[in-house]
Length: 607
Image (cartoon, rainbow, N blue to C red; front, side, top):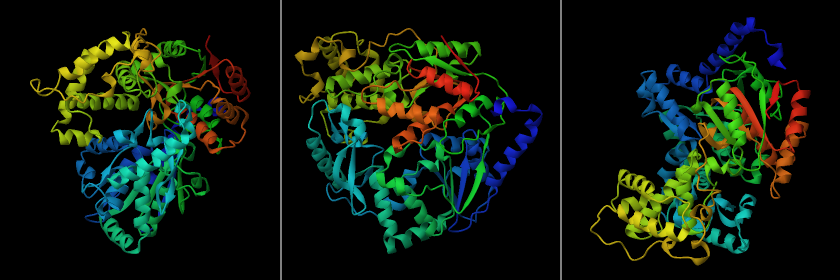
């Protein structure tokens, strides 16, 4: 592998090649109606290239550049770098920096909408149906269903996603699918939309001759260029939108890595036949890795279905010889995390630079992250949220969901349930975002520990939620939330158990910085990364076995989910700069050991 063949005397030459490839992207010409595709490996410095292009590549007078990605964090990083370069003007009108969904909503959809059918109010874009209380049915939400396309919008018959069937808990799936279809249509009629609906509406507008002409005029006058980062994650609808924008005359640059496509679950089966958006008329490549050691680059190449040739490490840690660590995955507890932290201690890697990641949140150690999702019962959801917010290292998205549950329940106690999203409730009751956040912090501080019985914990929690009302002299409404009602079958059980947690989260501290699923660290990097390979269960055995077979045996994935699972492992592994470790169950550990030995990739198995 390249890690053995590397000659450090050529480092300077390699770096010059890498910089030349970056300059080619920075300086590339893109004419009206042209598409430039940039294939960038992990650690290639694509964010720097995009920023350099934004700083240096001038546009016609009074025109801006639209730069989009799939996360708010990516946009925040771009804005930060523009400010550091003393160019804050590049973050404001006529430029646009934000998510692709926001760009589509602001420029292709919202300006051309008529008022919604019901309510006489404006349209509201939700990041997810998780944000609307009426979109929930127990521990399922509209996000757990797929909907049939009707005239370009996914508002037809509902189908429960396979990944959500383990949460049926004896309920009739046909009835739930009927509920989901009816509820989606009702919320859409009230003016609520999420990403899938927005993208469908955009395609309808672009297919309308008059509206498409208006869009062409507005976009080409304001924007001299559209840049789409992480373009491999575009859905079928987004690829269609990009092609339409190119046809309308907008210059477009798409940047991405097909091996890092990990959001296929957003797509329909029809997307499998769609050409990837990276198939542009012109292609440039960035194949030098400024992030990881060559050992890590060699390992990462084994996780790619296509282009198995390793990327070339050229950064600060390129010549590091630290072998890949393989760690036994225990059935319970956090021994694998402690072993990983021991290796990080030996290398003097600081705690914030230690990431523990897994393909699915259910694979993360509950003693650190808490239960991955809330249970169906109202009291269970409150107990789950408290446990997550008190967990040592719960994933950010998990914490956000938990915080929203606490905020919503505070408002339920203060004013009674409203059945509308949190932002609308705050506006209705004249509660500021700062006020509800202060109340959330106080409630979380005063709530008792989850090791009490649910009955005792509930009684105390009801008093705490009401204690911090904005007007202590005003009586609280009689319509109390459902979770305050007694329930004999659960009242004698510990509150942490009803909340779905494995314990009261009093585990001795483990010195790790971030614990989350791999989707949440895409675009990030850390000195040390532990990737937890899922332990097969009755429900996941076939999927996990095919994942390992695709990696170790090189067998082509037979289904799209398996190919994406391999991409997810690839994304997790390529976050690491210096130390990369895998936690594997006893069944899979010898399999991977033999594979790495055969591929001559340096590794060490920890006891």
